[in-house]
Image: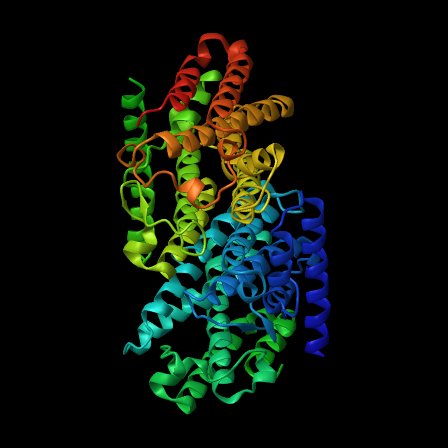
Length: 290
Length: 290
C-alpha cells in the first residue's frame, strides 16, 4: 500500500517538474537534468512532505513546489556524489550514472542547474506567500550548502579510511542526509504558519528520520542485493567509509536505529491519527525492501 | 580613480561576506569558499550594481546583499570552470586554482556551497522587502542555471573545436557572461520598484555590458600578459574555444565591441549625469589594463 502511495506521489512530482522545465527556455542541460531527476527515483522525501502536511491539514497542492524543490536538491546531490572525484559510482538506480551517460562536465553542470532550479521553483508563482517563500528558501539554502548536504559530503570524503567516533559519524550523517529531511518537515511547519518552537521541533524530528533513512541505506549496503538497491552493494567497507556499522557493527547499529525510530514515533504521538500516514512511511523506511 | 573605487567596493563586499560566513556554523568548506571568493577578485559586478543604483538614487547599503550574492555566484562559476573536467585551468587570479589548492572534490563542494550561499544571503534579513527578495531570487536563479551561466558553460565546452557561427557564439557568451550582468542591472531596478518594461530594458543593457566584458577578456587573452590577467594567456586558441576573435579576427571583433559600447552608452543617455559612474565603469571595462 505504501508502495502505491510512493508511486502515485512520484508521478505527481515528476509531472510537476517536467511541466516546470517545459515552460522554461530550452537548453542542452535539460536532458541530463531530467535523466538525473525523473527516472526511477522513489521520491520518498516528497511523500514525507505530504505526510507531514496531514499533521496540520495542509493540502498537497500547497506543498507541491516544496516537494519538487527537494527532489531537485536530492537529485543534484546524487549526481555530484557519483562523480569520479567524489564516490566514483558508475551505477545509480540501476542505470549508468549521469556522468557515465553524459560526461563529467555535463554532469557537474546538470547538478548545478538542478540546485539552482530548486530556488527558482520556490520563488516562482505558487500558493505560498512571499514571506513563506523567503523563509523556505532561507531554510533550504541552509540545509543544502556548507552547513548541510555539501558540508556533510565533504566530511564523508574526509572521513574515508579514518577512525572516526560515534558522534563524528552521526554529525556527518545528520548533515549529509538528515538536513534535507529536517527541511522536509520544517518547511511544512512554515507553510502551516507554526510558531518557531514547533518549526524547530518538526525539523529535529525530520533530522532523526533522515538519520534513520541513512542507517537503512547502510544496512542495505551490507545485507541487500544489487537488484534491490539499484546499485552495487558492499561499497562502504570497500571504500573505507565511516559508517556506524563499520564502527559498532551491524547488530548494535540495528538496535540504535530501532531506538531512534521509537523516539521519533513517540514525538509524533501528540498528533494522534493525523500522524498515521507519516508513521507508516517511517516504518516503511526502516523495513524497506524496495 | 576607477581603480580606487573598485578596490573600495571590493573591500566592502569582502567584509560583508566574511561577516556573513562568520555568523554561520563552521564547516570544513569555509576555507576553500573564502579562498575562491575573497582573494584578488576585482568585484567588478558589485561596482556595476552600485553604479546602477545611482541611476535611481538607491543607496549602496540597500544593494550590498545583492552584490555579495552576485560575487558568490561569480566565484562559484570560476571554481567550477577551472576544474579538470571543464577548462582544466590551474592558475586563477595569479594563484593556484581552488582544486589545485584543496583537491577536486572540495572545489566542487565549495563551488556548490557558494552557489547556495547566494540564495541564503538574499533570503536573510536585510533591507529588501519580501516581494523584492523573491523577485531577486527568481531572477538570480534564472540567470545562473541551465538558462544562464551553467547553460552557457555547457555550450562553451560543446563548441570547442567546432565551427560555430556569429549568433551561436554570441548566444553562448550572453548566457555564460551576459546573464549575470543582466541580473546586476535588473535586480537594482527591482529594488527601485521599477515597472516591468524598465526592468527588462535595464536587464538587456546589462547583458550587453556583460558581452563587452567577455569580449575584453577575449582580447586580453590574445594581447595581454600573464601578469596583467593573473592567468596564462593565449588559452582560447590552444583549447579551440569558439570566440568571436577566432571567428572574425581581432580587428573586426574590436570594431564590434566598440559599436556595442556606443549602443549601451546611448541607451544610458536618458539618465543624464546619474549615469556618469556607470558609464565610467563601462569605459574602464573596455579599456581595462588591470
